[in-house]
Amino acid sequence: MRTRISPENPYGYDRRGFAWECIEAQSSAHLDFGCNDGRFLNSLKNKHIGRLAGVDVSAEAIDRGRELYPDLEIMHIRQATALPFDDGVFDSITIMDVLEHVTPQSELLVELNRVLKDDGKLVVTVPGRHVFSFLDMGNFKFRFPRLHKWYYRLGHSPQQYERRYVSNPDGLVGDISAEKCWHEHFSRLKLSDLLERGGFSVVFFDGDGFFRRLITPAEYFLHRLKPLMKVLRRLRDIDARSFESANLFCVAQKRRGQ
Image 1 (cartoon, one colour):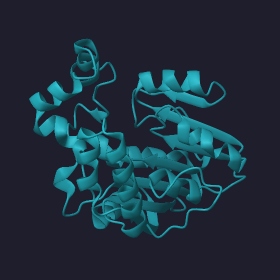
Image 2 (cartoon, helix red, strand yellow):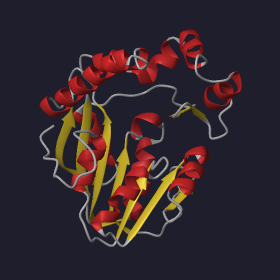
Image 3 (cartoon, helix red, strand yellow):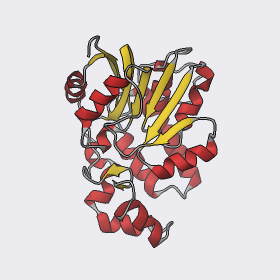
Image 4 (cartoon, helix red, strand yellow):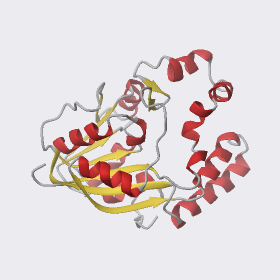
């Protein structure tokens, strides 16, 4: 990762750390699309932005966020392509690790373009397509559904598995759209083309990691071994700082007249 993380940044060399650096302080309004429980949005308060808004398709995540951060403007949405905001409201928008989960990618970007001001900034993060993409644990449940079910139920009830992966009320399989059912990976060219079709111009690219797809499975299966986990986390941090292939980060700008 080439982007420098400032001392006041509450995150490390990852997508949140990158996005936090890219969002300008003292702007009038920022939207976090796919805000989950609002943790990232809450961390932007120190930037003194006039309005902080977040949306997510997971009602469970929004309910949790309202308990954790009751003063945040976060809301549950059922349609990603029909946002409850007027045209040109936001100075900046973050959409972190969301595009790879949804099918109407172009339509979503057009909708984000609509609610963004002219020359507004869009910060996007997605999994990068590279040599170790096939090891992505996000696709474990699709490649090996029985093994995934067995492993998940080691720490969760059958009812929890059913609700999260079989009959999710928000139309998800875990955190991925049931319509898509695959954790997609992007090259710079593919993401650039997608953004261009949505009315954006790419400003710059960055990323983190190279061996992350090797480290994450080890963390996934060895998380109970705390001494070993400390070593793996340290390796992941070094990997994130040193490379920029496993995850792809992009800053784009809305084109005037779009």
